[in-house]
Image (cartoon, rainbow, N blue to C red; front, side, top):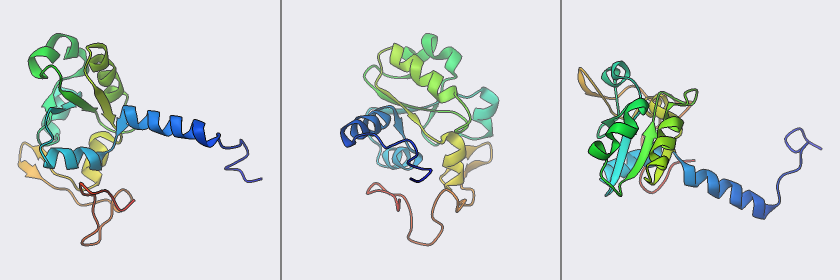
Length: 158
């Protein structure tokens, strides 16, 4: 017996349901980047952080809608029928989860972007700051550094 399987793995059918459910609720930075780059129709990426955080840096093409304002402002900011992806600071922050919950309550199809702003930046993807559009160095603990190794619309090296 190994430590990893001290509790036996789920039956394959249960595992399929579990992992499929996760993918229904969450997406990753690479997939959001690919969709934004391809100008996926009806996709709205929502930054649910504070105004100070938004000004510090945000995803190109994202809209700023702090969680506390979603109920009051969503209809005027996000078109009806749009598919919404929410993000906040990073994996240690529940802001994107709370924002996704509010959009779901309003009837929007919604997913949370795992990793949030932190992993977007760590993967070397572009951000908009007061200084303009910038790229920070890739953190090789989160994304490949070698030339030619990258996440694209066709998928990631993982």
